[in-house]
Structures are given as C-alpha cells and as structure tokens.
Length: 315
Image (cartoon, rainbow, N blue to C red; front, side):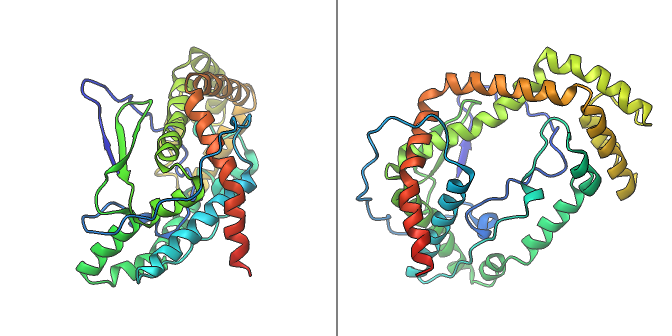
C-alpha cells in the first residue's frame, strides 16, 4: 500500500490528541503487522462472478454484528487463498471490548478511566499479543526468498491496480492481485469501487476529528474543563497536555489524571464534543455522499456472501 501526496496539495496537520491507545484492532488477520507490500510475483486473483447490486444503498452502514461477519469472512477467504499457494496463516481473535473504545477528543467514561487510565495497560497487552503472534513467528522463520513470496502472495507484487484519492489529500494505491484482493473481490464484487469508497470513507474520520478540534465551540468548552482539572491538581489547558503530563507520574498518577479528565468532561465538554462530532460527521457524509453510499451498498450486498463463508467454517 502506498500513499502519495498530490502535487501542490498540503496534507492537513494531525494533532496528537488520541488517548495513548486507539484500539480499533478489529483487523481481519493477526498478520496485520506483516502485510506491507513487498516486491515479488503472484498470480492475479480469478475474476468474481458476483455482480454489484444495482439497488440503491441502504440508509446507513451495516450493523456491528454484520461488520464482524464481514471481517471474519475476509479472514477465512484470505487464509484459504494463502493455503492454496502453500503458505500458512492464522486467524486473529477479536480484541476485548475495552480495547475497542477510543477517545479521540477527551476521555469521558469515568469507569473506563478508573480501570485503564489513558490506556497504557491496553497498549502493553497489544504489544504482548504482537510479540506472540504466530503469523509473525512464521514469517520471521521463512527464508528471505520465501518471505518475499509470502508477502507478494498476500498483497500482490506491486501496489498497482487499485487507487483512492483521499479527501485529506494524497493518493492510496494497492495491488489488485494477491489473496487480500481476491478475498475482497469475492465478498464485494467490484473491488476497485470497494477499495476507493472504503478508503475515502475511512479517511473522513480523521477529517472529522480535525474539524472538531478546530471548532471555536470546542475551544470555548475547554476553558471550564481546564478550570475543573486545575482544581484537581492538574495545571493544563487541554486533554492532550494532561496526557503528556503523566509520563513521570506512574500508573497511579495516570489513573488519577484520566479520572480527573473524565469527571471534568461531564460538566459540558463531553456533550459539546458529541454534538460537534455529529455535526461535522453529517457535513462530511453529505459532501462525500456518493462514496458513502457506494461503501454502504457494497457492504450490505456482501453480508449474505460473508454469512455463507462463515457458516461453511462450522460445517
């Protein structure tokens, strides 16, 4: 996968305001850390016999349960494809529920903050799983030539064939060959449209968050929040500064700071953030409605095929 900036375009600067960990780790494979594009060769995936649905897109995205099924089905299809080419691949397991929560603006869940602070314990757990990942061990044990062949079989030989121009600037490219593309083609039918629309929609998340953080209403809501955390012993102006300040405070200090952040957010910042996030999200969805509609249509159309793949796993 490759990202290039468009000529003359300037990529918006990303503010580091996420909690220590933003754990959307529902990746289809535990091999996610080894799926970079490597030079090599692989045969093109066979063309899909599934035609894209001509029906208009449903009003919204698929449910969380349907998305879980889509992820599982893609994992199974990718594994089976790799097996046919003589490689092993182990499926990942869904992360615990607490790891799926993220707080890109401010921690507003007091119980979560009391348990995890800013998430350093979850980061450590993810690191342990990464070090013990059987896919990582398997690929590390391959010869250089076999490792190159593994990556080419998984991702295609070169990042060519699929392209998405991102709303935030730049272009993402990926191979239309390899087992990843074969699995997605079997699920979604029109692989090029799926790749383009899904990458555009995913990019809207960062755009939405940057808009929220630049909104005057967010800045205004920070002032009473900052006064509240100062009363609790933390002289900072933003959640970002508070998280940066806990580096030398140890685990107990991290939890105390996170609880203070969450408690003070209840006085207005959390509600303001939710409202701003929804408004900017709606505006971006309207601005990129064609891509959002295409992503929704392809995902809804893929769910029956994904269910059949997952059901076949248990037969």
